[in-house]
Image 1 (cartoon, rainbow, N blue to C red):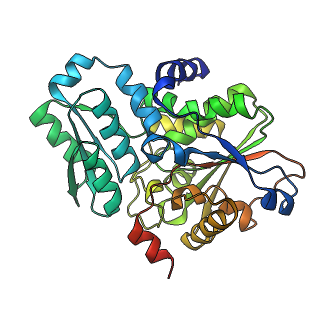
Image 2 (image 1 turned 60 degrees about the vertical axis):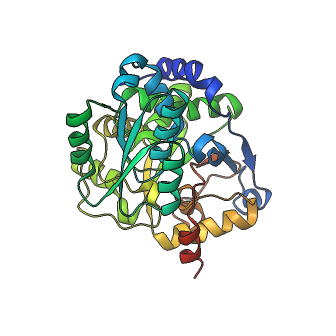
Length: 315
């Protein structure tokens, strides 16, 4: 299991190639909930989400000569795909990304624009990746179940400890578990009293099921508007960390995510994707009561929203 030293090392390695994303407040929400509401604006990260942190840390710990010879391969519904493509591009490495057919068009196009060879499929993503590896010997960069990827994502949490040391609650969405596990390590080793709350869509509640069954599971089906939280399975490393550190897990409906997203649009003017809105939804829909005068932060993990999806949820 990684520790804060691994995350600090990752921050030193990737710091010059990522944005130190800002933290903002909301007077309206702070007053309404008798707390000091903060947002970590990771939607302004390179490629539009936190994913670039983990990808760059992983690449930095591999043999670049070998990667340039055989390339890299990965799988993703969108945000990790763009990060892999961008990370490969700046390191002059060829990349192939397998994406499910439910991926939004804008994320597929953005991944292609960063230079990746994109394969859109209905097949099992991991099996497709293995097929490509057998043919090309490309190196597989896992979207979340990898120590270097987790440490890279944990740099977001490390930034919070430096920029908002008084933080006492952290809310973030959960997909495969990369971000939540990195944040858990960074924040709990900084201050064990900080409460970490993970949020999942009801239609993609892999971590909730994993915690109930005592092991990382694969979902039988996925049905959520939050494609950034739609990982088909939970990573084993991610499960182990979350099982150790997470204080609470809350599920929210797509309707609750959408209504929260519109509230964030209106009150903060931040153009987020549905995955980001999930973090705040438990507060808006009274699924978690903040202590008075607390200092919670909500992770706005990405801003890669598709025009067609935006029109769909506007109806």
